Amino acid sequence: MKIQAAKVIVTCPGRNFVTLKIVTDQGVHGIGDATLNGRELSVVSYLEDHVIPCLIGRDPRQIEDIWQYLYRGAYWRRGPVTMSAIAAVDTALWDIKAKMANMPLYDLLGGKSREGVMVYGHANGGDLEETIDAVGHYIEMGYKAIRAQSGVPGIKDAYGVGRGKLFYEPADASLPSETVWDTPKYLRFVPKLFETLRDTYGFDHHLLHDAHHRLTPIEAGRLGKDLEPYRLFWLEDTTPAENQESFKLIRQHTTTPLAVGEIFNTIWDCKDLIQNQLIDYIRTTVVRAGGITHLRRIADLAAIYQVRTGSHGATDLSPVTMGAALHFDSWVPNFGIQEYMRHTEETDAVFPHAYRFEDGFLFPGDTIGHGVDIDEKLAEKYPYKRAYLPVARLEDGTMWNW
Ligand code: EZ4
Ligand code: CO
Image (cartoon, rainbow, N blue to C red; front, side):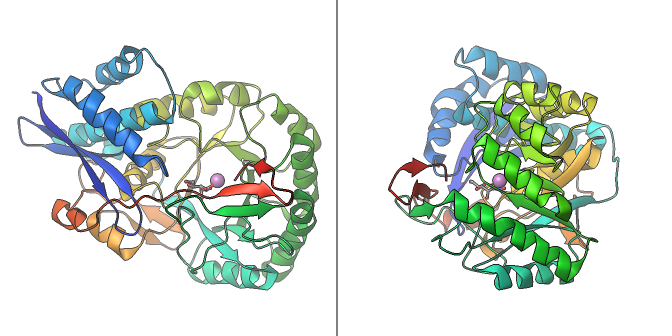
């Protein structure tokens, strides 16, 4: 059996997505997501110019060998562009293998460990009241777990606050939007938000929060400590994780569970944090961290240290990543939670999929493969549109972490 053809499909049904389609000489095809938000075309070139020529004629059944060939063979290891491209190939090959085995992907991975995948949704509002209402709306929709982000008095455009109610899309302009950030205002406000949420809705739902890399380690320790009475499911990305030592400092100061890893791209980014038990949830996902093959290695390492998975699932991860992630989540023994931001109707139509939401859970469906395909005709209708994530500056103009 041979890989006969592979092509990259770029489409923008509301936001940009990059999809790899691999076709075998037996007519079976597989789909992988290669979307890297704000830097999409770099992965398109990496795939078209450097990866696809090496794939043609290879045996698609040799997923591990192809993974190692692309990882070791590039010489230049790791990095978001390389690892997103490898992820797309890997996801498409697992899709093909599961189709050939006539199984849903979760069966090929070892079978279901659970019936449904608990997801968390994003509730956000411009101010405290709006955010309280938004969380109520998610509770009404059946969610068991809800991430709450709110506008902060005195801060223009705080992270995580969308314009619509169900859809939040940060990559919003053809040049990066400028936002302003002030940590002291944020640190005073967030505990009040969660106090009000618990006063209003009690403790029956999981609540989560994302600090989006804005804090220093000692500020992160303070926030975690202040949030302890409200029993968060997790506090995410408190501080940029390049310096992983800093998590020791955070950990000394708080028992609020910590989640990190949506921007990590290999097990090497996760290793110290996991082995030193400095985090509770690892947020690496299929598209960012080298596909199913590599994500499984990260999850297995994490399991030894009782660290659970909490895969990134924002709108920039296409329905292809969501489908593959749900099969992975259904199998992985140390599953924690799955992030789920709904895609627009246009996106859902371009990517027909078997997964469905019910009562706070996502179900992968029983279709063979990972259950997501691409409607190429429809995809053609939506040409690529350059879109960047915002940047953040302090009030005095200093560049900060968005
Ligand atoms: O800002 O995926 O937890 N979710 C997040 C996301 C990220 C976007 C960046 O592309 O932090 O909303
Ligand atoms: Co995040």
